[in-house]
Image 1 (cartoon, rainbow over the protein chains, first blue to last red):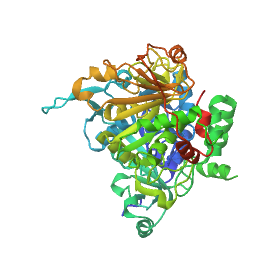
Image 2 (spheres, rainbow over the protein chains, first blue to last red):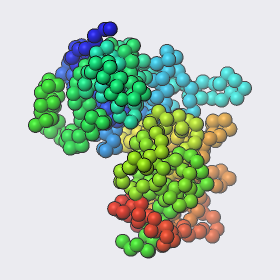
Image 3 (spheres, rainbow over the protein chains, first blue to last red):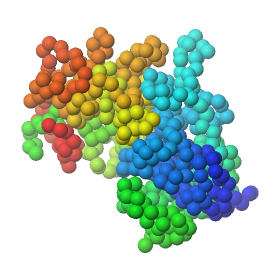
Image 4 (cartoon, each protein chain N blue to C red):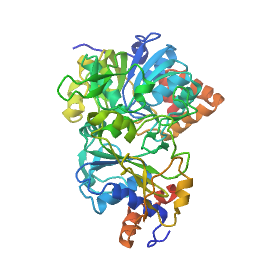
Length: 281
Length: 254
């Protein structure tokens, strides 16, 4: 089978200015942060990011690389609103496509199924339709004639996800209690890169958890990266919990330009290995 | 805090619990401290069939104290986010959300203050409010009842109110129901001919004028407004057990 192992920097080499990026995980949970850090190092610009957002969107707002965010929310969980995202919204430095959380899911699902849209009641009567004039409704062709929101497919160029374990050919395992929607991000993307805490032989992957934890199969993945701590500072259960202290430090930098510059120099303008060393010390 | 005398927070928690009465075997989702406590009180006392999670992905068979970590034998099922969406679209759910702003028809805003395009303050965003309100029963909790929260017009409609739902026609609005609004001053519903917000009961010690002065729209005030029920000593005992740290006592503005 194909050996798809590569480095984070080789993976983000596929990303060019103006692309649409899909990012797995949820809020500040199992986010592919090693890839986000690599995107910062690469300096790629004018990105559209599609995400159940957390510090992925926040960091790319802070570095000025994000042009447009498509999201159901942008939260750090223990800090309900992502502070760098809040700042970008209030300063008007990013475009925003704010969707109901369920609408966001249907957009991914439509893309994964190669459909132009999926219908839903979510959004009807709310200002989500007003703030997103591109959203249209569709009338049921059946006797009920019900008017529904047609959520357009969220197609993305490149998706990034982080798993607990994977094998070299791109089978991925989520050992936590929620798989989130990483499989849909893979199928909504032209190309997906998966990082993981540890690459293991296929037999070990299969014996390392219930079969239901094998949520990613190799058809979905173009490249696999072993990145221990690759979701830090977000949680990656059961391997590690969220680093709340680090997250608070990160969040505080939204209010202090000097603190942000210092944070960026120490944790972002460095290699992934140097990042992990800085975190450990 | 006395173990036998009811505080305002206790009255609020019981009023929240009452929102879930007769819900039976559906998912109860409570956002925030007092809603979580009230929903747990309902499950512990008169609505034992309610399906509730740990706030993450475990369905718990019993109502645990706020902040308690579930043990293995507290678990009865699995509710990852994908199943939460399926459940809410299925309609077997009653959510109690907060509201940064709410108007007389129950339109709720948690998204932003000011124009959405360039907000003065970015709040949570719409989150699940549009989908929740159009798909299943919703109630609201407001810990600090004032005219900045209960407003004539919300800045951004996140949760759908009765006027917006009615404009969708009978198909679009058939699953829409805002059951009740509980605040630190009283209990409100929309059981009026045009579904404008109505005062149901005042919490003990609250004057009608205080509610009127702190509401940014004209409330429907029926003759003979009730007093919100005060929890019995037995219920107060359950509340102390479910909130040993007194989180809800700190949340409610008196």
